[in-house]
Image (cartoon, helix red, strand yellow):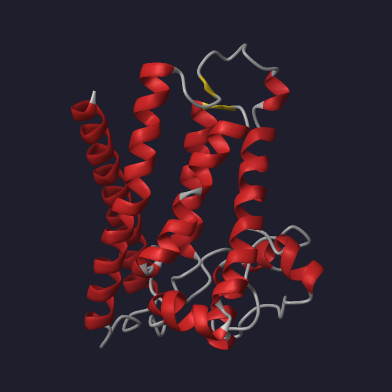
Length: 238
């Protein structure tokens, strides 16, 4: 049993690490084409970002691997495979619930980590990326990585979700985590400045957080920033 659990944890860590390297690598290449010179003189910073991110991959991967083993062997979690287990209208609802719950947890823990003592101990690693790059998406101190790593493992025990919809959640997490740190806005202005865009976080919104620190704390949505008065709009530099 323990061998199977360890192998599952190692496999999931490898998957998280490879997913990070692939996604960040692709968008870093795009950045080099669209913004030539953006990464100039950032080699040491990027190497540091990759190092912290690979450490974070283990922190994310180990609990995910244990839970994946428990789901397959003992039916842990509320992840389901049968399309008829819940009404079809529920399929898109579950990802929205996951993303909103994750966004809410992220907003409040993120604000906490900007308190001076927490910032110095935990969050300064992430903000050492000046300017942020596509490689900074998982560049966290281990304690910060742990606050992010617990979210999906907790949610799969609480909220039913089809395995394909869980894959969609993980895809959105990966893409938004990377693209929000690229330092430039890849999405069209007509989307970013639309009514929908006023509630979604993209690079130009998160870039302002990295510039001013005490604003724009959200991850996917601008809901909590707007409710709490911490939304300062988009960065003119992204």
